[in-house]
Length: 178
Image (cartoon, rainbow, N blue to C red; front, side):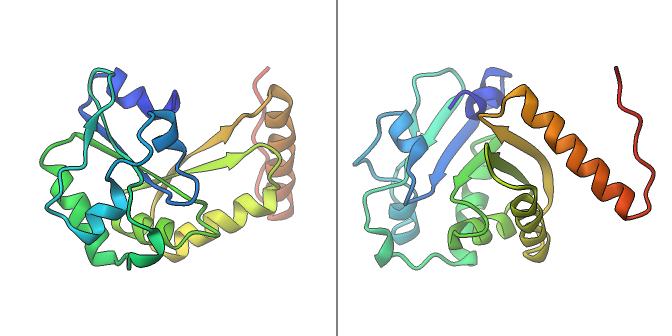
């Protein structure tokens, strides 16, 4: 939740959408369980489902009440939702399940302007590479990576892995700053 509100704190009118009907982390973080939201909108786009978060500049669309198994998400419905929201918000942030295991994340990634990959602590470099490959396959644009719950030593390990991959590919290894 702290990272998700950064755009609003910077003064951008922002809506945060919980499009992860399995995880529902955003919905839980803002105590909006049981409220209409993302999956309800896909069934009935005329519903008013965006709620104030209690934080200046930040609105929330919770995951929703409709059983996600009854909802047939489509690229057209997700694209329509994003277009509808563009007229009301400067920034639309959509929290999805993992790109490697979530149908919604592929649909939303394809319909979005860009994606940010979140890598959970303990995930392997290979898993991150597979996720980036999937993002490229669906035609989405990855603009950054967030290392969730990372510790300082994790960055050293990641830097060594990237350097070793670059050397194997015949690319020069960048000089680290001290």
